Length: 250
Length: 239
Ligand SMILES: Nc1ncnc2c1ncn2[C@@H]1O[C@H](COP(=O)(O)OP(=O)(O)OP(=O)(O)O)[C@@H](O)[C@H]1O
Ligand SMILES: [Mg+2]
Image: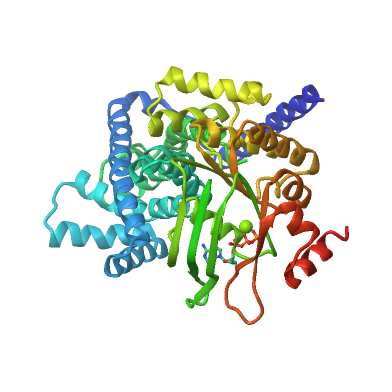
């Protein structure tokens, strides 16, 4: 039974991949272009630079947005009404407007009003402000999902407040939020491509520049997609593994 | 073991934002070894038990429980979900009672072995049956050798077969001299296994529950004096 279902799975996965490849192939034929990936070798230095830039921006953006998200979630759950409302306004504004509009807007505010000239820095800031609102929601969901009985049990076994936070609240919060946070990291990597519009030379911008030189648009973007997949597929697998590891909610 | 409750009242803030009185002027003064708390649903039994166990502070009044340490068992989900059954017992022993890791491990395994739970010790609560979870929760609560155990409907979320194994475990611990206060719907257990029984309910025209009857379990069940208690018992003992 298990064997058969595995076989069916493999067969279906194979058929699906085949269909996708055929579709791409037909499109290529209709375009009348011949595949030519030689630019990859030619521009390997620049592509590598762009790739590293995307990784660097995403990593820095993830760390900063995690910080922003935790603060926003705590403020939103907190008792100080003024800060609570600031956090609510922030989260709703960011989640309710498109990233591309925010990039233009914040690039002016951060760049012109606050005088941040460095494109990497403003890119990271803009990306983190955006992603922080989504991370705040993940953290808030995690806090809300904590079972009150677990806290009462902590009191009943005699844990102090700080022991309760350290031994019960944080581990359970990490377990609930880590898998979606890994998913959010994946979104950050993809969203960072939009920073190309303010001329941050990350992966997408690099490919745009290369394809503008050699007009190999199709191959450039196909290759660009593959490079993003190199980052996001392992993350998706890590996310799945974490989900399995932390699956103790029953 | 003496338990004294003097003029105890407790209110919660309800969903509508108004104070809702649950317990009203509860008085109790008795020597107990094993006490069951029974009464209608919503009658404040859990609330009183939480106050006695020190988990919540009453809005008014005083409680005095003559003991050095207590344990508490919840209706369900009282085990920490992110720890194995064994860790649920050992970590509190280490962090709260200052056991070394080896001492805690020995104590936990001794208890788990006795109640046939050793093979499940390395599983997390979600991988255990409700009955196993409750028995590990009881083992955790008695691991530090408290003088008094509070149990809040430890079997009401369980199937009958698991109910029996949990009640058996409590009965066995009782025979070793453990004192406990249990909130329960298992009338047979309250009557036969508990020395005394208290009935919490709402007297007519009152806001909030108090003891309508307290006494030896046999007397409360066979010969209730309060008409409300009698009515309640007649109704539920019909089946
Ligand atoms: N934390 C709380 N906040 C607000 N109301 C509460 C809270 N805990 C209990 N109550 C209310 O207090 C009343 C008494 O609750 P309690 O749980 O003590 O009753 P009980 O006798 O244990 O009932 P049951 O047999 O259903 O467990 C109920 O009406 C309940 O809704
Ligand atoms: Mg209750």
